[in-house]
Length: 128
Image (cartoon, rainbow, N blue to C red; front, side, top):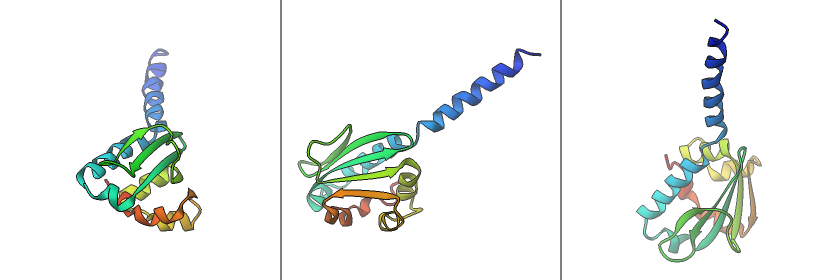
């Protein structure tokens, strides 16, 4: 029976590894879908946003400055604003559990750059 315990531990390690990956990648996909579904979003926001996610680390560029807009992995070249947020707080924001304003007021979102852009990012709330 000694061999059964390590086999049982392996799936637990695999599932904890999956949760350690965070939700940012899935959320980035949903942000991209929201941008694609709203043709006017880029012209309404008019900014290049770098979204830095912590715990675990991930970085995305949200282009709402030119063309139809979109999101991609990696840092932005000369972003108008950089938002830094923990993965769990990003989940709360996009699931409707918290507003961007509330997260900012409680020190859960850091804003570097043009803070006026943040007022135009309500589309991030309640994505999925």
